[in-house]
Length: 256
Image (cartoon, rainbow, N blue to C red; front, side, top):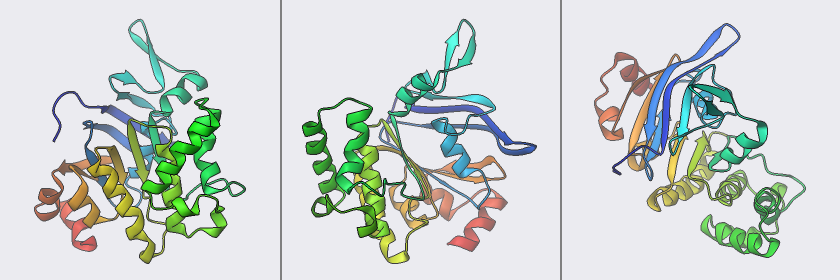
């Protein structure tokens, strides 16, 4: 475990869609180099929480801090005001996001998908972006597929390209929203292997997942959510083997 101030800190975050309250006063923190896994039943608010971390969904109240700086808002005197789109876009570069669906550009090769943002957004030289992308493709085991288009890749391969694409922006935190849920069972392992490697290398990660073995073996902290609140959290093996809340016990009895 790492010591010191959290890299990512969430304070009293609340979110509703119309009259439906999805998140209620969420407090959580993630230290640099730690892996936090979020589990819970469908509709518990897991993905909404993840999307609120980088303001893909704008919270109704509460604040998300990255390295002590509020995300999506800025201080003016004693009050917080929403940032401009360009300011928020700059912040989002520090928070990589991997979705359930791969969201690759279908008309671009794996390599072209990875170099797009570093060249267009971060103004890197094309030669440098290509060199870095090839290193990342090697990391995710797809160097030989650099010039393949998404339709020529399996779902697991596409998701690994999506991970490399996020890593190309050199984020401080990687957010994963059920990254294996859209994959055939035999392809899940290849994506989880890449995520395990990232964890071993010290990447800070927040992972919404149904993969309990991954959460048990890789995470530093496990959060169980239900009904838009954090029911309990702690070291994964403790939560999974000795849950304290009846709702957690009920959920784990069905999935373990």
